[in-house]
Image: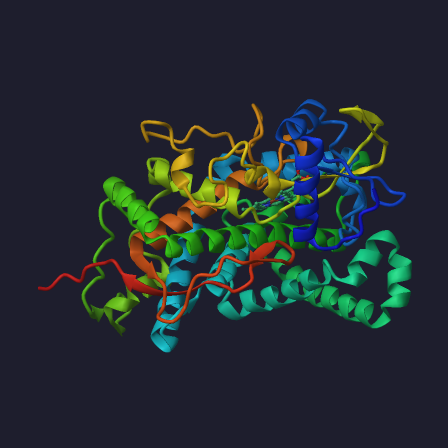
Length: 479
Ligand code: HEM
């Protein structure tokens, strides 16, 4: 069958149809190059976990990555080990808890300012900048002013807008042809890359002042095969990949989760009650007065005290004691996975799957959203029901998101190529959702409805971004 579509929703609907007609395996060959789509849970498990090595390369989908060989082979293994097992090891992630607290404080101050200025909040703007800020702190170990974060956001937004464009689709097949056909686009893209270089190199060079081990520290020390080292240009690319990886999917997942909590006030109330049962009510704002450097301030500015650091936040240890929080996050990732297809994989040797011969070099795509929405596996799959992840007595969440025992959903992929940032992303989602719900009641502004229509960009985003109105849950104490 020849399949001609660039539309993800159309592709999903074709696969759903084929699945219902021909059984669980959906394998499509497109044109002369074999591109296979797998929409079955058990087959995905078999392929990614049991035949993981055969399916673990990436096709050349990283033409913008300076070191294309980092998609597979020994160079990839060196990167993967450095990111997943060195930089993102639990003790190093824990050492950044001050950064999460700091960024949360900045975000809350901005949210309150916007509500005061315009009466409502466009949530994604704040979430995106907060996640980018956090990624910058972890990547370079430096705190930036809002203007510095906005500059990086604008360059990254520009670079990402190219992915998914016709220019990029042709670029993947033939960079030379794309440069000839889209000369102006290429020139603009080149300008963006130079701007990115100008912004990131000074940050890379300030790393020695950092207290924590930053990602750039690990890249500088990274020993590549044959004793080679990364060049500065390659490091810019790797840092840029870290910033995009750490920001895009997490901020969109967070927006989808907040949108569902605003749309379903009962779920929001239940989550708030469960948080309060563990950590108590949020702290009252300090009374108006004079701060430690002699400036007068109002209760609203409690969040701005001490360089934006919040007086009190829900600690990361306490997050572990709130199973319903975990259930809300997992339900958000099931119902709205930021990527509807994982990054493509490549077959390293010819293999047979349910009677289909999959040739060496074929591209394999796994249908993430389809799996999380399969009515044979999930009751009412399109409903937002966090309870489905709780154990029968509600005491915990018994779900392995990495799918090592069996795949029911796979927002982070599975097997050898699973997202190396999955644990960090889960921590960020839990931390921000818990604290934002603890401090504020999030409501639908008058004349607005929460619209969960999806739009495919670099990740799958809300077509109409979430707008809300917040009410502080902190009770002012009267003298
Ligand atoms: C909710 C947040 C996130 C989601 C849903 C997500 C999802 C994914 C998925 C589906 C893949 C492809 C897996 C596969 O091919 O089987 C991936 C790869 C990747 N992710 Fe994430 N991710 C998230 C957050 C992060 C974070 C926080 C980082 C970094 C700090 C990160 C860095 C990466 C990198 C570097 C890869 C490529 C790995 C490779 O090629 O081996 N991601 N992610």
